[in-house]
Length: 362
Image 1 (spheres, rainbow, N blue to C red):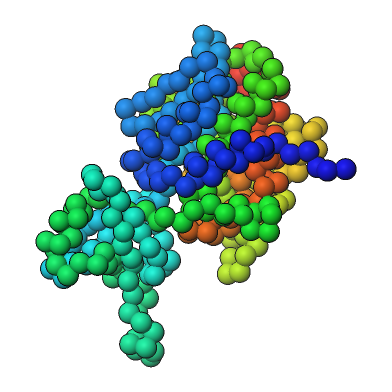
Image 2 (spheres, rainbow, N blue to C red; image 1 turned 45 degrees about the vertical axis):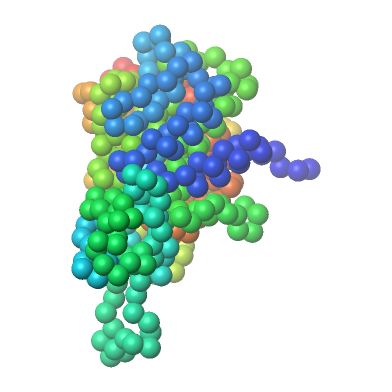
């Protein structure tokens, strides 16, 4: 008997289009428009804010408010300096990995469109093997085929232009989704699929549901901070990615054990409200949804922290998607985990009651 899947052809078409579109931190609006267009049939209205966070709302008149959230931005670079020989030096926009940069093709975003470039690097034949210099943020550079600074500027490239990688979506061995920016447009994709399932299955919720795709997570959870103050939710269920620690050179004693294909990772951390988390794990058990556990010490490092500590305290929890090779252009997740995150959020929403406080003192 064939396994029943959640994702359909329309879902996958949306996922590919959404991932292939560039949406670097501070420039998320193109991706947000794609996301909102897909979500439109499944929500009653939209909220957007000054910096680009987008929210699809179901039952907007309800007083009790539940957020499900992912973040829309991807890591990138900024043009920081153009030297007299027409080479471009960069600074990070988010946690971009300098070690993967050499030999990568890049898109430099200008007012008039994309300018292509490459992160150059000295050939192996020319390097001093006894003291090879590693790629560092201050020595990697972009060559866009120009000989002078004036030539570069004539292309429309200037200090402050944002730079992304063009690597596009593909699938390894039938079930492994690979692309840059799975962190965390997979989150936006999964919460949109939850909204689709609620609509298609004709589920009526006793509260307002705010499907929230936040901006600027990669530089400090800023979008979630702003939109939480506007929505003032009672509950927030955040989804982000977490490390598959079974790949080489990761210390599991320090990082814990998590593996793609083994289910969502449910977080234990001070920002995670324990009664809400228990509802999620109980829901997983009741619906036979496989899951893993992860411990996150002082902070989760995700938008969970922004929601949890806003508005006098919001009951918040984190459901993470295991991912390999974070902040590279070959980020990898497993289809089963994607479907199980969607299913777990969906089923948990059906368990939340109108007005539930998750208080320890009632």
